[in-house]
Structure formats: structure tokens, C-alpha cells
Length: 453
Image 1: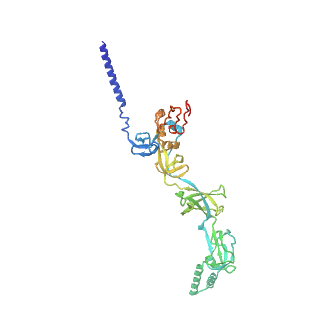
Image 2: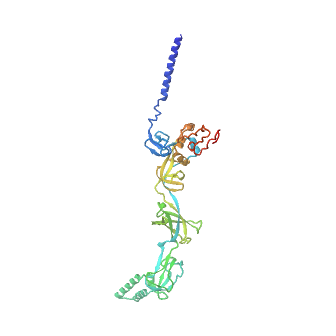
């Protein structure tokens, strides 16, 4: 009986051993759904102290030689190169907000300084066509207003007087030769610059030729006085129209794109606070000032009531026409490092990824993205700086991607450097620890007994 019981016990122990071995083998064998480390695809190795530096083979860290490079697997969180998974609790703590990237043409308003000047297309110069003497000057002060046909000055010119007298003497000629001479005298008067009105009334009260205003305006320039002798071609005065002015606006070189003929402008001057004057760009002058790196936009301004005057400083607001559509991101979504700009993309399900972008102009809180985005993506607009700074440290990345319950088991990325132990107190009471036996900066342990030498 005793022998039978021993046999049954041995069989039971054998069955238990076989079952335990089966369970252990099943537990340690990797399943088809969970690939082993040898089966996972390694994208690259990276330095934990500098995650942006990638290597094609394992090795040691360049920043800390005692640290090994870490592999980046293709099946890790984010499904890509720089994906990061953030738990909902961390996302709420960071206060993350996102915005949709839309594609549109950016229309912006540009404010620049400008100076008012005369519209030179409406300027008229009155000059002496021949040598003579100004016997009378009817306009005596600059900026006097004149009207078309108004007498300006009387010029005593021998050449004009002789031609006018010859033309007048042949007025009653009946022969063919006489009419030919009269026609020749008329052509001579035109060559000398006499107008039809001057030819009909050749002389004034002083016996000279009367010069009349060719257009309405103000005498903006007066360089002669009565009794002065002038030579042929001398400028006597200039007449400008105050109802039409030019505004020369200084456009920074980086902002000239989109500005051209027809661009609308709103003008403000300190002399008329609260008033706004409208105008439009006539031309963007093809010259850049070498000192200020600005290009001049010539703006035509109507001034019928004379409220504006040449020489006034003005502030111009230009509405730049919409250009080519580009993806637009909020200004607060951009992270600038000085050499590069990037955004943090919200990939959904808590996944975040940085994306380098090339930006263009900015206006009304939005910035053009010339390369890096297509439109339709979602970008992080609040808290992205924390994500970006954490993404530069692998240890912080691991804290973002690891669930809170298992964070205590995360191995720190920086190895622990062992601290040398403090040597024991010498056995002989007269012996003193040397400088090589103590840690620099550490207090020397107090003696527990014995006599000092």
C-alpha cells in the first residue's frame, strides 16, 4: 500500500512539472502580434542628449561618452520620425489649443511715411524765348494765384518787335510776293515763341510783348524782377496746380511686392486730424534709395479745397492687393529659432509632430506658409513652446508618451555617475588623511578618539 502511494505521488509530480513547463514556454515565446526587438525595424539611432542628431549604426553618445545611442523604431508612437503621443491629462494641463490651416490670399494693409509735392505733370514754365528786358512784372510775389490768359510780364525784345512790325506792315499786301512775305513773318513769330494772342496784340503799354498765363494755378517759382535783363531760355516763373498733388511714399524694399499702379491709399496729415484723403498709386518708381533701402511709390491725390500743401509729411495706409493663395497659420502657432520656423501639428488621438515651414508675409494675425504645409492640417496655437522644448529632450519625450501609471518604471536617460566613497578613519590615531584621500569640497570627518600629534 505504501509503495502504491509513492507511485501515485511520483506521477502527480510529473504531471505538474510538464504543465509548468508548457506554461513557461508559452509565456516566454513571443506572439505573432507582439514583435520581438530583433524583428522591429530600426529607423535610426539618436543621441539622448541631442535627439536631433541621427546615426545609421549604434554607438556611444558624443555629448556623454558613457551613454549608448538609442534606437528609433518605426512602430513607435506617432507612426513616424518625430511623432509624440500626449495623454489627455497632460494635454489639458498644458492648455493646448489648435487651429485649422486655411488656404487663402493674404490681403494686408501697410502704413508708411510720405511727403507731399507738386504734381509735375501739371507744372507749366514761363520762359523768355529771346533776349530782352522785363519792362513790367504783373506778378510780384510767389504763390500768387493766376488764371489762364492773365498778363504776367511785359518783355521788350528787339527780335520780337521787328518780326511783329514786319508782320503788321504786310497786313494789306495784295500781291503774291507780299502775301508770301507775310506768311514768312508769321512763321518767324511762331519760331520766336509768340502765341496767337501775342501776334494779334503784339505790344503792351510799354511797347513790349505781353507774356500771359498758359493755365490756372499758383506761381510756385518766381526768379525775376521788373527791369531785369534776361537771355533766351531764362525761366521767368513756374505755375503749378494746387488742386492736384503727388505724395511720394517710402516703401521698404521687403514690402514692395503687390504694390503697383492702382493700389488704393488712405492719407492722413497731422494738420488735419481726423480727416482722411483718398488717392491711388500712379507708379512704383524703379529706383531704391541706397541709404534707407526704400522704394518710392508715387500717389496722385486730389486737393480741390487746398487743404493739403506741398512739403507736408503724411502717413499713408496702402491696401495691398491679394496675391497667390497660400496656407495661412495664426502668428501664435509659429516657433522661430532664428534660423528656422516650425509648427506643431495635431495628428489626432493625442499625437503631435513638429513640422519645419518656410514663411512669407504676415498680416491681421496670420502668416503665409510658402513651403511645409498644404492646408487642412491642424496646428497647435497654445502650449506648443512647451511641446517643442520637451521634444528636444528624450527623457521628457518619454514622460509625455508614457502613461502616468507606469512612469515610475521609466529608466532615466542620464546615467547615474557613481560617487567615490569616503575613506575610513585611519587606524593609527596620529595618522592624518591626505588630500588624495578626501573628496574636494567635502568636510573631513571628525576624529572619534586618540591623541593629536
